[in-house]
Length: 105
Image (tube, rainbow, N blue to C red):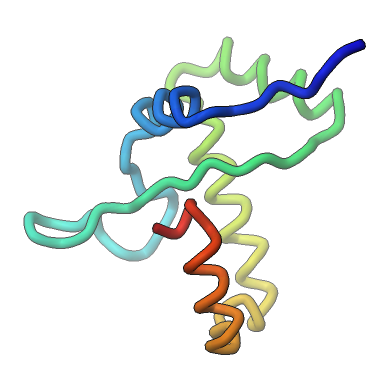
């Protein structure tokens, strides 16, 4: 019987240590001293087997290819087509999300 792996604080901590604060394609300049750095949040999604293989091939063959920057840029570009993405959440929902999501702390 196989079980789904669990990700504890140690695993997530090591992942977050490897994720440097880098801004993906954004019109805003990198923050200078005293300004807040970009915070990267780990999340899980799924892609087709073929897409996964292509990502791995790009990681191997393309110097400097970083999947997180590609993912960020693609999501930012796609979200630009959804004006609702810039609309703030209702306050009650936002407060609940801030209380319950460790990724937003």
